[in-house]
Length: 607
Image (tube, rainbow, N blue to C red; front, side):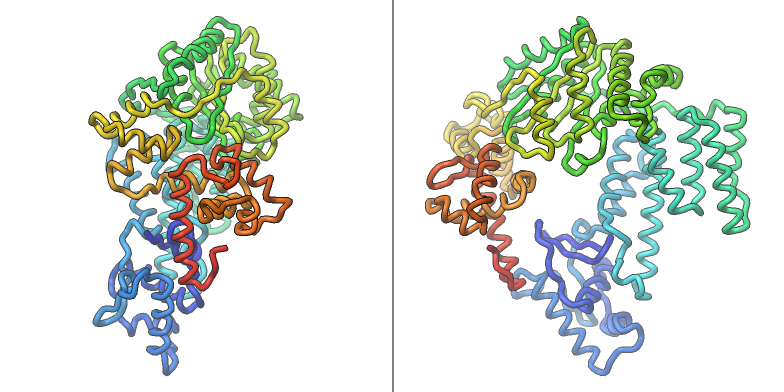
């Protein structure tokens, strides 16, 4: 399905492929049709807008040429289904789900607290995050000079700013003041005339025990408004200032509405014996001896599912759980994973107790984790984080879960290694997962850290567990031949098996599998996608030399790229080269076919 974007430069994507829309005039035609949201745009209006009231003599013929060029790009068949000709003009036959601006507005509406006052604020925060992630720049960026685009671009920009303010207000509702303060500082610098940003920043500072800073922010707001507009602050800012001066009780953070507790589910997909290892780790923490474990497996083997079971077990035993998931997009943020671990725990503490945790020896770490600024050298921060862990664990035994450690930033890896060497005598458990074979930007530091951890390895699901999984997903006793087919296709990989069963049972396209494979090939690094595509296309002819030539990889690069894919469990090394799981080969072939069809339309070659 095609996706149309206007929240930035105008773009069209078909799957992962960005379509070439041609000349600026063709792009302008598409943008103008998108602006009308499925309504017919009369020919005279299109001509008037495209040429800003000064159309050339051959304007109609030129317009039709632009439309024809667009159709060659957009239409998969001879009969138009997207760019439609109507009696009076043209319209774009795209649904609301295909247009990023309409998806953005729908998500913002869903997050409106007036629609559901009882909704968990964390749900609203997720909706707003998803909405704001759709923005890639100013709306209709390349047509900001055009009169026809300015009103709609301005409307969308106003909605975006309101969504940003609502997101920041939701963070305060969730008591995540430390996370909100840096974003509010940036927001007030770029939009100093919006009083709501100043109000939220002052409130966040006050709730973070920074009363003087809160009052200073309100003075800055007053100065901006007076200098730029000659106005005094509005009632909301004046009332907040008065309340801060008298420390009004109403300024305290509201209680976070609690959703109904989710049922505890401990599910290890046939790896129940691993729960003994997990129980030993948790028991060591409860006894004050400290425990640690590394869960390692190829992508898709169910590592995160096992970690969720560890989390559930710890909750049943009354432990506090701090969870962090490393991400390649954030691997360059110093102490980013450590922040994920500590910020939610600190935010949930009463203010006086949090002040005790963040005092004295922990001050360098508090600057990094709580105040979002670097304080002291690395050794001082690591020492502070250690004592922050000690103080938090003295309240109640602490489980720290770190998923996908291969993407962890360097500083957080050093904190993890520092903590592992000092676990003895602490009521702390550390459970870490690693995706086997996935390249890391810091392999030496990662290997050194992981070597400190006892390790359990996850492999493929045995047939009896696969049968139970198929039964669970289909709601019926599975046919043994169907189970055998799914196991043959997926090799018992937990993720692939579950998706294979779901798509075969429902008849849907395996889009989740395609995204998963695409993500792994990106993670494998440059040349991996080309090599995998060559192995898929060549089949029985996939010798090393043939694959290297087809993928355009030199003799020097080829072995390294191949080794990564083999370590990740995607390929089997041999002659010919083969995929470890047939379903992955079919997925790569399907994606290659889509790419080749796009290449035909755009005049490009696949390899």
